[in-house]
Amino acid sequence: MPARLEIEGGIPLSGTVAVSAAKNATLPALAAALLTARPVVIENPPGLADVTTLTRLLERLGATVTRQADGATRVQVERVTSSEAPYDLVSTMRASVLVLGPLLARTGVARVALPGGCAIGVRPIDQHLKGFKKLGADISIERGYVEARASRLKGARITTDLVTVTGTENLMMAAAAAEGTTVIENAAREPEVSDLARLLSAMGARIDGAGTSRIEIEGVADLGGARHRVIPDRIEAGTLIVAGAITRGDLTVTGLAPEHLSAVLAKLEECGVTLDVAADRVRVRGPERPRPADVITSPFPGFPTDMQAQVMTLFGLADGLSRVTETIFENRFMHVAELARMGARIETDGATAVIRGVSAYQGAPVMASDLRASAALVLAGLAARGQTSISRVYHLDRGYERLEVKLAGVGARIERKRS
Ligand code: EPU
Image (cartoon, rainbow, N blue to C red; front, side, top):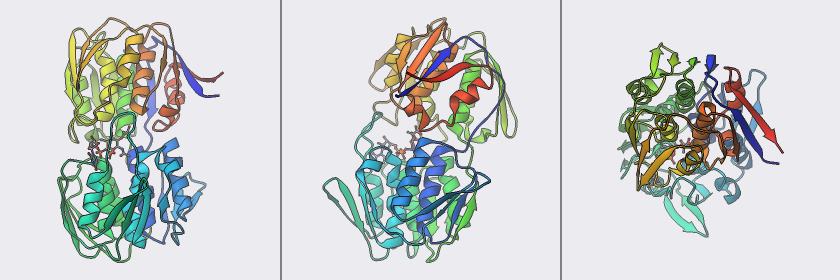
């Protein structure tokens, strides 16, 4: 029976809640283990469905994955036994495509199912493939699979046509084991890219410029193992901070990296949210009513698309008119219709949503459609009058570790139910 979340809204959150390790940094870190026969140990893997999916894929490719007593995950790929990432796994999680670069670099061949479109957009991987071609790979698409072959990848200058996070990561992993120097121009500057560079460097790679739009990678023949502590999840952190603000609570979110959240924190302050920011924590106190604001999503260090649905939920209760423009994905407004069921007044026109703030949401049965849309519905439910029931919470479980347990720990009335 699929699970749902039942929330009794209207309770200000108070106390302290800790952030888990970043999903979108853990996934490339796990994929990087394919580059070496030595063990890669992820010290703090988050307990997420997407992490389990990638672990399963690595096992199919020949990895031995063990959970250690201290909670760390050890991945060792002494021998790659299969070079194929099958459709059944790739179709449940697009980030599976992250095995393409490391597989190609390690074995000279990779067969990875082409991810289809997904709920939030078409999401092609043409930039990944163009980059691999530059590195000397032959790429063909056969019956829905990308087939990549190269006897030895060779360093090259790659300029991506647009900023792509997993594209940059995939190319960086391949280049780390290629012959010669690769330069990636127009690289993604997301903290998750820098975190992967940190792991690859610990494995012996030579990488300069991660965190800027020009990354230089000097390939090395023999990457080794490493231990890695993944950065905190900035999107989980941002979601929890909005939870404190939207419930007019007094909440301290710990274990985060505020420098990864500058655009989000600045926007919340603009809305009248009180924030005390320390080195690894943020205390948030919500305003009686948020002020309206405008947001345009853009690659890091701009406002993250992965926080768009959550701030829209806050804007829905603002005293006036807000505007949200989504520039990264073409179909990332699916939370709008569900928020409308709870009383939000939002009109969309192409990539822009105009939000007329209402004084309160009413609890209602709603349906989650993708990961961040689900988080937005949880936030609306926490703020709403009465009871909200969110179905299809498996979307939420892909990227939030025990969110309902964390929220209940700071006073929310939230329960997971199966019926
Ligand atoms: N794009 C192309 N061609 C490519 C690659 C990307 O046209 O070859 C387009 C995409 O369709 C999109 C834009 O470029 O319109 C940016 O996509 P990007 O490649 O940066 O996204 P991603 O790497 O597939 C990661 C995160 C997403 C996050 C985006 C943007 C992971 C595993 N996923 O996706 O996270 O929204 O970057 O920051 O890192 C989430 O966690 O909920 C999530 C969707």
